[in-house]
Amino acid sequence: MTSIFKQAVMPVMLLSCVGMTGCNAQASDTENKPAQAQAQQDAGLSEAGLRVAPLTISVDGKTHKFTVELAVTREEQSQGLMFRKEMAPDKGMIFPFERERMASFWMKNTVIPLDIIFVRSDGTIESIAANTTPYSLDPVESGEPVAAVLELAGGRAAELAIGPGDVVKWQQ
Image (cartoon, rainbow, N blue to C red; front, side):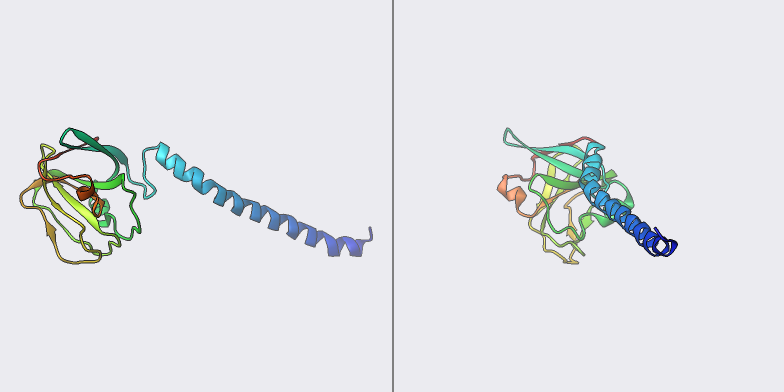
């Protein structure tokens, strides 16, 4: 090879190699996203990075099973399910409180309708605000102090005949 040919071809070959490495790295990142989601799930975390736990609701001798995200910190509770575009029928989010209190929620920036279920410290359901209106700023309040609030996909409580007095249990 002449030195002129080497000078002209070698940089092109080097750039091609660098470009191919970059493409492989990007493809690898894309391929790893499902693996990352699986790793989060294996670690007991949701795609949003929240801890997940099994939850059951007992209704007239039947047990309905859910997997819920735990919104424990003030930041997690402030974010809630805002901006989520869908929720599977067996998923939800629970907001446990350190001590019983009156609870008030709104649907600001919440895209999907939700059933908001107010849960007493003994696990019984105090009340349900069914199919709340997306984006509404109207407060949705408990009728008495509660220990937790559970959010499910809108209409799910009615589908499963869940009502006041039914029992909610989850791993904290």
